[in-house]
Length: 258
Image (cartoon, rainbow, N blue to C red; front, side, top):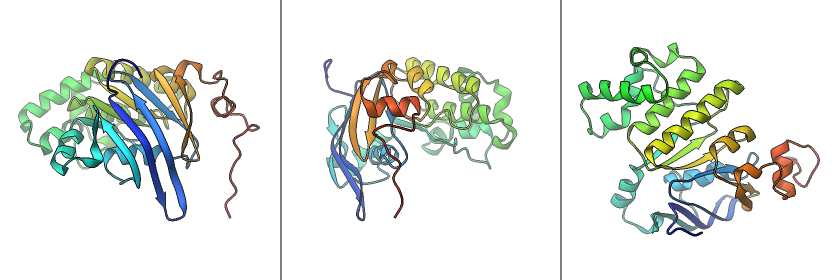
């Protein structure tokens, strides 16, 4: 990759759970300020890859570099400091039902005592505006919000701490096509505003093309293709094109459980 040290680089990442080899030597990288979309069927290793980067799972082998530094070989305090610069938008939003929206949005800033409660309300209003929500939404509970509004609040929480590396887990799941396109547009706008690097998992090909500069596909724990996200469906790789077009016939076969 040209242009210096990648923001995120994985080399030889391996992880097994018992006899099941979930990651089998994954190599991935994404340049600073770019957006990578990771594709693959259920069980291909997408979520485990992200969990390894986030420190939720310890890989069996390989390296995970952020800005050229291997997370797995640095002291815990330094690893936690880098973790503070990472944002995560969870698939289901993962909002705290017991807290009003404004506390949800500023949860990380409040927990780390980087902001007091009075300033947090103003900060929440500012960030909610960036995702197209009025300041008054801050006083509502998550249960009072529609699915699309919950996703926007979750996005606001993700960007409130101004991370420089953001992970998105199925950002359009459960949304209608129009709201999915709205969320994708907000993701692109917010990532560009922050100058952040984005890594997304999605099964939504329209979403992948909208939010990704590049795309990579995992199959059986291995990287089988990477290239421009705009070429999905016409990549020339039979596995990728079958997956992108949702075709039943092709090299990817549904595994039978034994």
